[in-house]
Amino acid sequence: MRCRKCGLVWTRPLPSATDRSDDYDGRYALHHATDLPPHYLPHKDARAAAQHRFVLDHTGIGASASVSVLDIGCGVGSLLRAFAADANVTDLVGIEPSSVMRARAARRLPERAVLLGGLFTPEAVAGRRFTLAVGSHVLEHVPDPVSFLVDLRSCVEPGGVAFFEVPHESAATIGDVVRARWAGLMHVIFFTAPTLADVFRRAGWEPLRVAAVGPPLPTFSVVPEANRHWRQRWRERLGSGATRAARGGAAAMGTVEAFDLGEDPDGAWLRIVARNPGPGGP
Image (cartoon, rainbow, N blue to C red; front, side, top):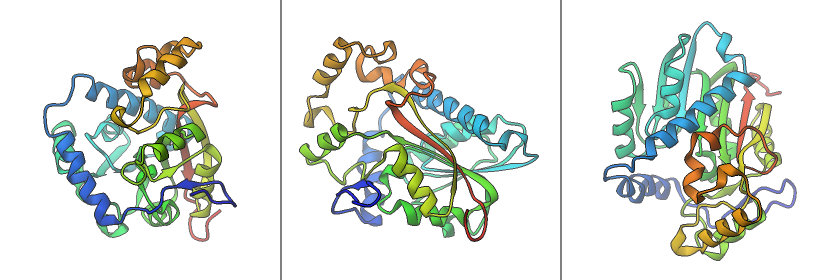
């Protein structure tokens, strides 16, 4: 479905909270139950390092005397780990619905980190307020991103900031999902730069920076190989002069070079930092 007013695209029907929780601690946990492939942690850590730099570059967090961080969908803890190295970060809280990934995160994070199960709600963090809330490839899984971001504002201090990264979607990507009948099982919301900024504004946030980053791969999508002949598309794109960082196919998406390519209007990922202006919104 596409909103005629704002252009936001979403799948229909949308999954319930129970369905989403079952997916993460069921199929998702099963997928990661065995030993992780050798590239998995370097991939996550390289992405987190680039995201960490983006936050420091576009907010005043680095100059704050004391920073508390909430990571929603923290996975193996890569982004929390990046912020844990900052001297001014005093508190680390992660929410991760997958018990398998949560256990992995616990082994990689300092003892002061608090890890919670389930999906994010204000009640999950017991009314705490944070200086910084982050989420990497989470918002595209949320059926109602505006309500989610309204709830998140109640957990961020006035003047505090949020950082999120999502896939940069295109008509081709969305078409892949629809043709593969994959709607609703993975990504349920499909963002462009304008629609990402719009959902933050509608939730009362003040966007500070929205940027497309990474290799220019607007047709990259979550549809698995069994459902879509994506390898052929990679060959076609590489043959037509795609960037060096894209060479080698999908595995290149996880290289340090790919995450450090910087801003590109056709970049595969969107990053946003937004400020909580306090009561009443901007």
